[in-house]
Image (cartoon, rainbow over all chains, first blue to last red; front, side, top):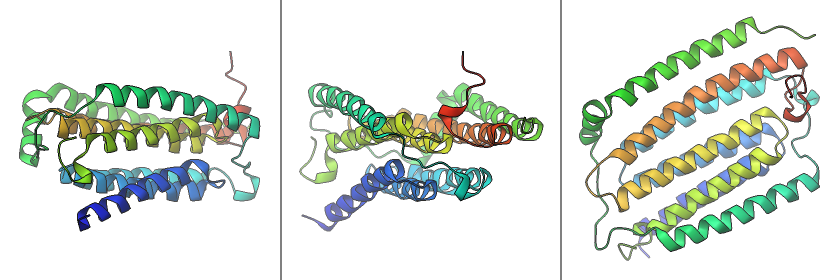
Length: 168
Length: 108
């Protein structure tokens, strides 16, 4: 095993344990830290997939912006002692686990059966210049639509937070 | 499988994305508060992005659409998180808690 493979295993383990912690932990703050660990791991995976620009964007957007947003949501949603426990009834958990395991089995079968890499091909390296050309030459309309969507969502979030009614 | 190195193997990435999807589904189904559901939604979106990038790198030779659409997914996730934060604050002001199962007023 080369050192690169060991680092890859560490990155994968960070991602998987982080996502498990994000889902299974009883407190929302620990779940948020698990989400941050998973996002860092996914950024590392993007570097292994020859997409360093995407890894940078992952850290900027998810770790920098979305985690801070969720942290603010956790802080604004009342004090800790008034918050309900995250665990619902064990019956519901077992039912959800059964549904998830079944769907994962089906999807794993589909993956094993039908996806394979192009034969004899090296992994492609997409440069940032190429990515910019794709955005501005071929995907111009979705690019502009995304910016419009973000503006609308930010204005909508401000309106929701400003003009929502108080407790009845 | 394109190479002998561990990280030149398409299926590893696909299974990691599948694991993220499973975690997210589990969280959306059993979490109690809206913020927990939001965290799980982020996991699902990341799984989708990982799938797109892995398939772009290994089986679509010579274009960058997968990476471009992963950036679109990140933008949509940011917009979704902002909206969800606004909704969570509104729900907390109105009901005094953020439990998803206890919000009965808009149930049909």
